[in-house]
Image (cartoon, rainbow, N blue to C red; front, side, top):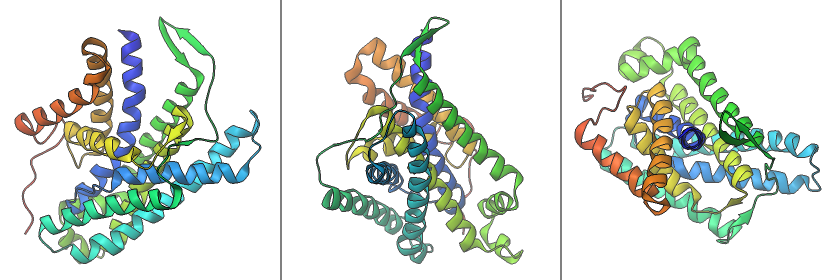
Length: 297
């Protein structure tokens, strides 16, 4: 059981990082950015290109190169998030939600098949693979790579929580989430804050993509589709629009998948995820930490 819990928390940390972007964007502009999962995929491919450009990595320099790839990927995916918001979403901000939703799906397909056209459709082997000997701690078999990635993911999540809760930009984000018109009248540059939100959320997704590539060792142009849906499920479980809820939802989803795959079989892993999504949307659509939101006019 402790092994199942550890495996679930490890996978859930990836879901939580991607789910944070969903919740940040929805909390401010009430938009389900279905292109967000593909920013995770884009981050993995940017990291692949950055690491391939270095070449000739040794065991000592690979960690440093991976850290550099993380910075490059987070910057690139953050910039891509800015462009998507500026080109695809901002002109439609006052439009019906269906138009914005269709645009989000179009942005998702553009990223997927843009990468397929430039990098090819065959899976790629990631240049750096985090491999280490397994250790047994309190009956749980884990690796140093898992611990490092878990700590890095938790550090990013805690840093984001502190940034939103303690900085002027974070206070502006929360003000816009409550009432964007009043925030504008109080002198807040609403467009700039929304752009920063897209940048930060996309950067976290890009970091998760590089981490997944380094851990699993393989990337492909469709890798963001399923994890995007699972991250959306995690955001719904925790309460979409609530950052701490997104973290909690990601971890709970990872645990549910781990337990479901163990007791029902690996082929039921994704089924457990989407049954959980349907259950929450039917019984508690506001999620565990979410609150009922009144419609803006």
